[in-house]
Each structure stands twice: as C-alpha cells, then as structure tokens.
Image (cartoon, rainbow, N blue to C red; front, side, top):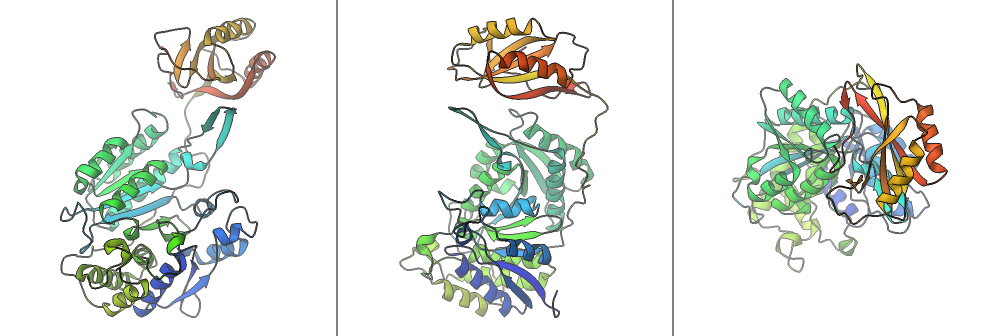
Length: 483
C-alpha cells in the first residue's frame, strides 16, 4: 500500500496483451478502485535482451514487494530463450494453485447453451512433468521425470476444498491417472481421500482423468470443482473453456501463500495485435478474480455484472463471437462495459463469494517420515544395441560375483528377460532390475556402486534408481509381465 493505494505489479505482456490489460485497467478505474499500477515486463521483449528466463530482475523485485500481479499473455519465442516465462514466474513465486473457472455466459452461443455449466478446475501448478526435468537416455530415447510430492498434493487438495467453501460449492472431484501411474498420480488420489474426511460438508469422489474428459464433453454440469495434477489440469481446463465459448472467456488465478498472479490463459495472438479487435473478457475477469483476492468484493461484483450485461444484451460483440470482420472493437467493448457499471444481467447471477483460506503447510522439506525404510536393490538403465537375451546373459554373469542377482530386464515397461509371452518392438534403452540375494538385508551405497562398477566395465549405463521399501511396502512398480 502506498498513499492509501494498493500497489499491483502489471505486466502488459506480448502481442494483444497490452490492449487487454489496458481494457481491464480502464474498467477497474471506472469502478472506483484506487490501484497504483507498477508496470514491469516479461516475455518476448525480455528474451530478445538476452535474459534466458524471460523475466528481468526489476520485475522479480516488483513482484516480491507487491505480491499481486495482473499479467497479459507472454510469448515464448522459438529458437532462443529457455523456459517459458509464464512457468518461470509460477515457479519463482510458488504459485502452486492454478484456478480456472468455466461458467456459461449469457449471450455466447455454444453447443452447451442452457446446460448450466458452472465449474472450476483447480490444477497443481509447479510440479509433475512440468518440473521440466528431461534427459536424452540414448540418442533415440528421451525421458521426462514426473515428480509428484505429498506436500504438493496436500497443498492443492486443501486449496480445492477451501476454494469450494469460499464459493459455496457443493462437491470436489479428484481426477487422476492412478490406475496406471500408481505411485505418482496415485499419491494425489491417496492424499485427496485422506483430506476429504476433513470436509464432510463437501461431497467428494475420484474419477479417472480420461473418463473425466469424456464426462466433461458428455455431461459437464455434473462437475463443481475438479482438482488434478499439472499436465492433466492444463489439458482439461482448455476443454472446460471450450465448453463456454473459448479461451477469450477463460480467466485464471495462480495462487500461492505469498504471491498471486492473475492472467488470461490465451496466447499473445500476434496477428491481431494493435488492431483493436481482440476480446479482452478473459483478462477483465482475471482482474475480477484479483479484486476479490485483495478484498474488493463489491467492485469485483460491479465489474462482473457489467461484463455479463454487455455480453447478454449482444450490443457489443467481439470478433471471436460474430467474426472479426463485423465484431465490436476492443475499445468499444471496454467503453460499453464501463457504461453498464451498476447494471445486472437478467439471465445470470453472481455467486456469493467469500475470502479463500489458503492452506498453511509446513515449509520443512521433509514432509513424510516413515517408520522404516530399506533398499532392496536397484534398477540400472543400460544402453544396448542387441537383443534382450544377450544382455541378460551378460548381466547374469557379471552379477555372479556381486551381492545382487538380476531379477529381470524390461524395455519400455514390459519384461523381456527372462523371456515371457510378450513380443515388444524393443529400443536400445533397457531397465535392468537387480535385487539383493539376501532378501532381508538393506543394500548399501557401496554395494550398489560396486555392482555399477562391474557393469560399467562391459556396458554403457545412463542412470540408477534405488528400489526402496517404505514401511514394508514397495516404493516402485513392477514391469508388465514381472512377478
């Protein structure tokens, strides 16, 4: 706060971003909210300055100070720069919860008009495959690590239930692929089922993510809040926005315990930049979410109602609804919303919003402390240009002089040695599972290193995974066909 004004970092963004942000700022000012905007930059213009992250130091400092950001879409150029600037911002400030509402708009015709769609996707925002940890295992095989933490799961699950309470919603569904990825996606399912017991006032259930996507297309009105992992959420939240009119109507909040970033999820659309034709609704409604976050509930309702009146009456329709050759300009659309401040739509009713209570989770890196743990062996991943039988025979011979035996070899998740019924089309990337001969022992790092040294004298390996047993349960999965 400065001079009784709330200071907010504003990042105009790339392409159509500045036009959308300017529209939102005009409407907020007209609604009487006294905000001091601190303009900073990120994205394409910053990449071109040679800053690999796309986010300069003065932008980072502004966000650290102000803690609230309104942001336009950012371009991630192809051929230079590194990570997406959007992802960089989310990770820098641990905005772990991505909130994507999707609600039917009056006056926006879709195949689902009249169905009463009103749902929210709560997506984990910083881990999963989007941790971005990738390696080439062999010249022809790439790997991406899917990291799911109990801490991350607890934060996003509690946020989903608290968000449901804040909006007076009745149910939370957890969407995972736990039937296949039992340790990673399964961890979210397990965490959800444990925490759901603390919210007896809210109905909860689990759904497999592909069935969730199917049901969103078939019967979207059955959903209220959906909580899911990062990549799953990225995909299904685009589905949900498509149900109600497209990305031009899709606001987003990225919430953390310290910083909140509000943005539209659509891209920078450079071919429309500067033409005064773009639909700014997604950014305006993201700003509405921002106003609620900072406690400006009355102003948020005032603006939201004015947007809905404007869309409902159809007197100012943007090009994404009626075609860019005859759509209302961005500036006229903005002016019409301002003129409609104080009015309420006839076919749409605002929810009774309350402040959201973000979860207070320990900052201790150790979030789970088991009663027991031991190492049963190791998966050693080997590059091998020949067949499974010859590799297996070679590794069996190597293991004869070690504390381990070769249990099996798999290729892309299917057991291929000892030979079984499978007929996979193998690649040169082999997971070789070694287990201790003494089934009650705990493998030491020295034992694994000794085995690895023996193997490396003959074979080229790329990485090692310990086989953990945690509280008597295996902390790893079996290959297809492994017993």
